[in-house]
Length: 59
Image (cartoon, rainbow, N blue to C red; front, side, top):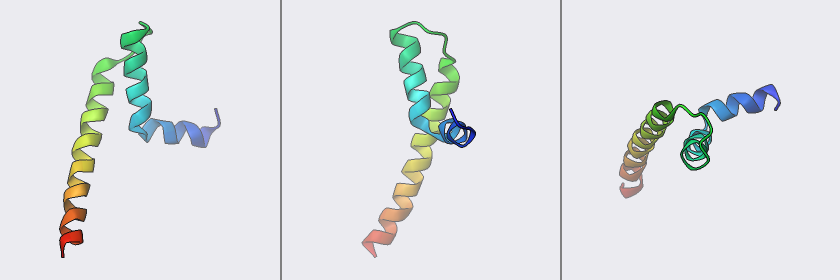
């Protein structure tokens, strides 16, 4: 994988979701707490961004 794609993968929450699902379904080693933490943080961040943008949309 090219270096720039590795960087994108480190900040992409979908990669953490896939890692957690792979660990739960297939049994490959996965850091489930890290994956869960990143997914919760991404959900909280996107909820905040959505609330700010919704306020702008209503105006």
